[in-house]
Structures are given as structure tokens and as C-alpha cells.
Amino acid sequence: MFDQKLLFKTMLWSLGVAAVMGVAAVLTASLDVVWRVAGTAFLTSAVSAFLWQAAVRLEQSELATKIAQGGAILFYLFALCGIWEIGDEGKMWGTACICLGILTVASGGWALQRQVEYRHTGLVAAVASIVAGVCWLYGIWSDQFDGNMVLTGFAIAGWSAAAAVCLVGLGTEPARHWRWIGAVAAAGGFVLSEFAIYQYRGEEWVGDWTFVIGSVVAVVIHAVLCYGTRSAPPTLTIRLVAIVSTIVTALLADIIVLQQIEGDHFVLRLAIAAAIVASTSTIATAFIIQRHWRQSKLDAAAPGNSPGTGIGQAAEFKTLRIECPQCSKLSALSVGTSTCPHCGLRFKIEVYASAPSSTLDGWVPETASV
Image (cartoon, rainbow, N blue to C red; front, side, top):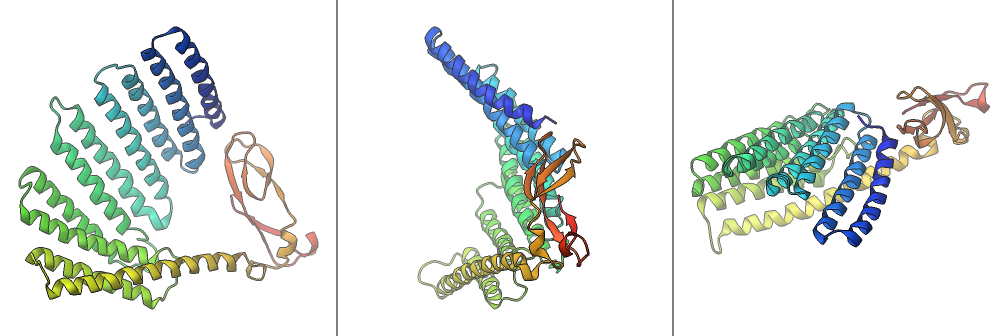
């Protein structure tokens, strides 16, 4: 949407303007004007920096970049009204923060859904953030502050975030369709929350069953995190112990809440024991998964495990001449992380070796992933 170089220059010029106008205002204007002028300049600089970073980090998804930058522009306009007290100052600042927050999350979710492992997660995050933001905006802009709509927005944000985590990895192998248990439970939790907001707020049974539904979602999220990414070890006994002990802990906690068990009760002791096993085995699982992930990266980087032969000679190539897909200009870019000198598009270039050949000392560059 915006040129990266222009945004970077705008950010730097805004800082300079903030310094010059700040000094001039201090010497000539009232203190109230000084703060407003300085705030406007710093706000311009901060928004320019956000626009620039959005263009850099989300450059692979044009729509995600536009969503994030649109949120930044709305934040800038409403924040300016708040600084200069145009309209209701509280509503202006509230709207500015909501627009920036929800559209940033929506852009991140939309960019995330491009990856197969996070497709459903990103889509849920993008849609739910917009819906929650609409509820918040409606609540604060009502003639009288609509607290129920604001609470509905928080309910959507909370339960959808839980559902999004439950759906991480859906669509990849192995399927593990039990993820849907957490998503369905989160949907039920939202329905119960809405029922409580508009009908039976404060009823004890509502709180109890919200806790039960939340425990089901928590168990599924715990299992998803224990399995980690596809780089996690496929078989791990301690992981099974962590998941089973967490399920037992959640089940005992639900019994304690529903039966209102208090004092030195045997069920309470069992719940504490299960929680100890769950926490220790979960920590051990996390460390093992992290160690396995690091070892996998080291093994992949080892010369003997690199695809093809002659990988030692491949390391001699430091630059490649590549035509930028954005500006169509040919440039010499360094292997690794590089940036197009003409338009600022970022590249990640990796060179692999193919089978031995009579050219280039026995190897030929096969692919360069950008």
C-alpha cells in the first residue's frame, strides 16, 4: 500500500519535526500547545514506523499488509482527534486503540493462514478479531455506554483465541481430529457466556459450568502444545504422561467445583497430586521437544546431511543475481537474508547442490528459495 522507503523517511522527518516544533513551542506557545504539538509529531513518527514495519514483515501477503496499515491510519486519525480534543476525547482514544488492535490481529491472522499448519488458526483469529472489535465500537459509541456489547466483545475475543489455539496443526498429518473437541467446547463456552451476560449474570451454576467448559478447552490446548510442531519427536512417553495427568487433574477439578468439595477431602488431595505430575511432566516434555528441535536444525545443517554432493563448494557462492518479483530489476543479492536495493523487498536465499557435474568444480546450484 505504501512505499517502504517513503515510510522510513517520513518516520525520520517526523522525529526531526518533533524536535524543531517542540523547541519552538516551548519558547513561544503555552504549555498546553507544547504537549499537543509534540504529541502530534511523535504520533506521526510512531505510526510511520508501524506502517513501515507492517510493509516489511507482511510483504508476502498484500491483503494482510493493507489491513495492518489501515488500522494504523485509523489509529492516527482518531488519536489526533484525541490529542486536539476534537469530539469526545475518551471515545476517540478508545476507538483509536480498538482499530489498531483488532486490525493488527486480523492482519496477523490472515498472514498466518497462508501456512498449512496454521490455516484454521489464522482464519479464526482474523474473523473473530473483527467481530469483537465491532462489538466494542458499538458499545462505546452507543448513546449510553452498552456494557453488554463490550462484554460480548471480550467473550468473542477470549473464546475464539482458545479455539484458534486448539486448531493449530489441523489439516496436517497426523490428523488428530480431537482438536475439534476444544473448538466445539469454546463455542459452547461463548454461548454460555452470552446467556450469562444477557440473562443470568451472577448465577452460581453458570460460573460452575463455565469452569468445566474452560477445563475441557485447557486440556485440548495443553495437548496441542505438548505435540508441538511437526518437528517434535513422534513418540515420547513423558508426553503421554503429561496429557493423561492433565486430563485427570481437570476432571478432578471439575468434580470439586460441581460438588463444592471443601476442606481436607481425598478428592482434593488426588487433584493436587495429579497437578504435580502434570506440571513436572509438561515441563520435561517442553524441554525434550525444544532439544529435539534444536538437534534437528543442527543435523540439517551438517555437511553430511545436506542434499547432493559438493556442498563445501556451494558455500563459496556469496551472491546471486536475481530478478526482483516486485520491481523486476536485476540485483546481486547475498545468500541468506537480503533486501532488494530498489524496492526494499526482503529475500531469504538458500543454495543447494545437485548431483556432481563437470561444471563449477563438481556441483551445480539447484534451487534458490526466496
